[in-house]
Length: 126
Image 1 (cartoon, rainbow, N blue to C red):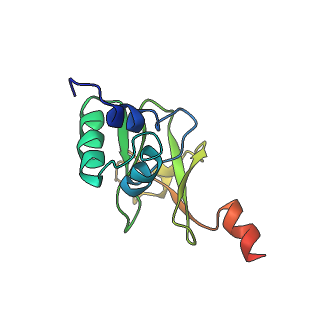
Image 2: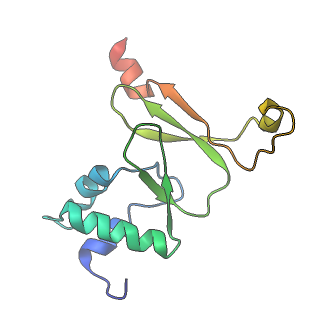
């Protein structure tokens, strides 16, 4: 990613320490506000380049398109709203999950995803 363009800058600016994981479609919709007409292909190319540079990381949610968030954050997990589909960070970790593995197994890493309704969708549901 040698060249800096308005579109690339608009995409890069979406990833902040307090930002939530974004899907490529969300990235396109938000970046389009600063760089109208941005294509999904440009989003994918830029996301790939930012990932290769180590600026962002992929967030895999079961059965979903990958999301992306700023790299370098402390270990955390995710919540996915079953109504709007947005993903959010859950700060902290219960820890000690290695004890759940069968005897003799070694846990090297883990991912936890909670599912339910985000605060906005929960309010709408009453």
